[in-house]
Each structure stands twice: as C-alpha cells, then as structure tokens.
Image (cartoon, protein in one colour):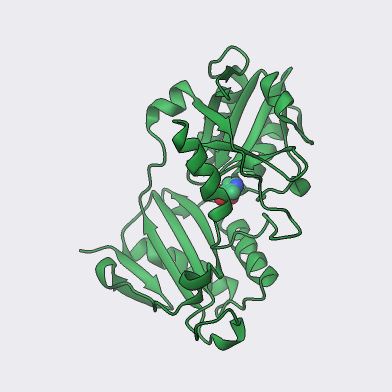
Length: 285
Ligand code: PMP
C-alpha cells in the first residue's frame, strides 16, 4: 500500500496527495511546520511540538483550523494508518490558496498536512566519528526581521547557509547572529562542553528553541552535568573541549571540527558520548 498522507482530515495515496499551486505556502513560504519523531509508536514530546507549532502560527497571524487536541489525535492516526512506529513526522500548515499577491486575507483555506515517513539524515559514521562543520557567512535572520523562534515555511536563510556548508564539503554549517554571536546550525541547535560544563546559546540569541535542545538541558540536570544557556562566540567553540548538535531529525550528533580546526582532541568527547547514550535511553523509554 502506498504511504498515506493526511490533508485536512483525509488520507490520500502519496502520489495523489496534492495541494493548489495557488497555495501561499508555495507562493510565499507563508505557513509553519514541525518535524518530530516517534519511537515505538509514541511521538517524542508531541505536546511541546504542538505548542511550538501553534505559537509559530499565532506569530504569523495564521489560525490553525483544528484544535491542538484534534491535531494530536490526527498525528497519531497518521502513524497508525501507515503502521509506523519509528518514524519521522512532518506537520505543515500553509496559509491556503488565494489570489496572486501577498495579502493573507485573500486566502481562505489553511491546509493541514501530516506526512509520516522514515528519515535518515546522516550516515551512522557521522555519529561515531563526528561532523566537520564550517561557519557560514550567511547571518541568521535578524529577530526583528523574522524571528528565528518561528518555525516558518520560509527556510531560505538556513538553506543559503546549508549551501555554503555543502560547497565546503560539510553537511552542517554554523550560523552566527546579527551580533556575530553563535546562534545555531542550519537545522540543529549547538552545544559546547568546556571543563565538564555544557553551554548552549540562549533563546534570545536568534535561534529556534529546539525541543531536543531542551531535552538535553533536562537530561543534563538528571545526570548532574552543569548546563548553562549563555552567549557564545566562535572563539568559545574553537577553545571548547567538545561540541555537539541537537535536532529532532539529527537527534544528538557530535562535531569534531569547526573551520578545519579540531575541537578539543578532534574526537567525539566523553560528555557527548554520555549525553548521546542518555538521549537514546530517554526516547526509547
Ligand atoms: N534549529 C533549526 C533552525 C531547526 O530547523 C531545528 C529543527 N530541525 C532545530 C534547531 C532543532 O529543533 P528540534 O530539536 O525541535 O527539532
């Protein structure tokens, strides 16, 4: 059976799951989304993902046509219909189709799309040996222009940085904010480890407040590892002992060099290894 895609309460074969070319999600990137994972049939931190989705929508004046409770039921139903237990879930809400022209008031029907599929973002080798990343020259969106806290369908800022990374042979790239401070990577949050303490940029550094990031901060507490949200510069990354990235798709992945400079010993560090194991245990219950 073909993968079943949810659109506005109905399921369609993957091949026939279509929305209008007049949809402002396509025409202008006008919409919001979430990327989540399910483990053994349970969506990891579904409530937090839905809170973020509805907050992103609120921030762009988009009214999601169904309640959060209904959305949670529909996400789970999409998994069940596809007999998926360990999956990646992409939840998209677009402004809907309208006339050509930016005016969101001329759209009438926000589209709610749920795709449950598998994803393998990075090969296993990267988890074992760590990523080499570069600093992108593309600065993270200025929070006063478009807040990085909104998970919107307009991802060009991140994509331009991703292209820089790929052109340098790296699958991820570090993005600095408009003040030159470390913000995050193109699709992942960043952490460093210094003298046994884990450090990550604060919410107001111009980042998406990752659900995985917050899970790591919670885990650190449980493990008795000191963690702080604090302003970081590239210098802090260069002199760090360890570095790792977090995201729903990537989970927890080590970084061993920045701009061709090894971080610490240039190997996956002990604290990172401990957190990777703890995260695996957490998500697999
Ligand atoms: N930053 C950005 C820009 C992202 O797109 C994502 C999600 N892929 C993250 C951070 C990580 O967020 P989460 O842990 O909630 O997936």
